[in-house]
Image (cartoon, rainbow, N blue to C red; front, side, top):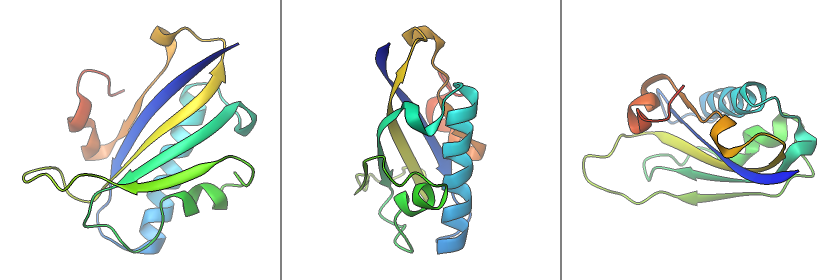
Length: 120
């Protein structure tokens, strides 16, 4: 079993706690489903949010999904002029038998424009 990393992102329509929980939950669920993972495969998840998001912690959505024993942390993205607004990104460390080339990175909605090279 190898340790791998999975990336993902979603752009929110608005900075509202319920909307953030819904969208981040959808992102995390998509990462798990598209990579054939369960919560037991997660080592840790690192979330970042752009500086214009402050209604809630993105990790709260993971806790609502039942990820209560997975280490989670949140941080703020750099405030780069011209960067896409209202974006939550994640970097999940996982245990999997998939090769690195078999990992599916997930960029939902408009966030797909962030990584056209790897967005699914």
